[in-house]
Length: 122
Ligand SMILES: Nc1nc2c(c(=O)[nH]1)N=C([C@H](O)[C@H](O)COP(=O)(O)OP(=O)(O)OP(=O)(O)O)CN2
Ligand SMILES: [Zn+2]
Image (cartoon, rainbow, N blue to C red):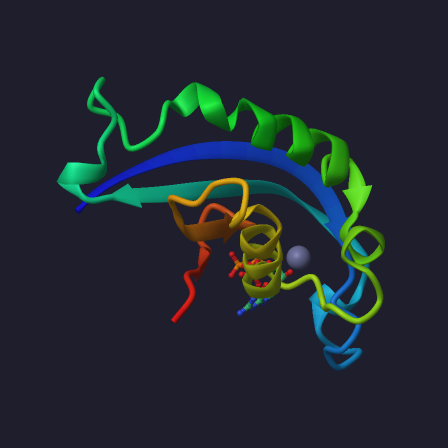
């Protein structure tokens, strides 16, 4: 298998309001999020150019991220039923984009330089 990744950035606020009140993340705060899309293909699926997918094809994803999540409150963007943890945000993005990017295999979300959550369907 070949895999490619491309990294995207956005800034947003959130409240993890299902945490106990003593937890700092139960208060509203923000992150400079990093999202990494991983796309995969077998050797026989590569384009004639040798691409899993042209990185430039992901420009639509960048625009969507800017329009949908950048400088937003994630609790509003994801709705009241989905806690905006890094894990569930990664799955939410995967589910939004799996049909438009059939080669998509993993979505990863980082909230801080030390943390990553990864979602790939089991
Ligand atoms: N499994 C998860 N744990 C936590 C999440 C999450 O999405 N998934 N989110 C948070 C907070 O939103 C935020 O990311 C804080 O994380 P934390 O690592 O505690 O960040 P700090 O910078 O405060 O940590 P330091 O240890 O001081 O670097 C919490 N947990
Ligand atoms: Zn947070």
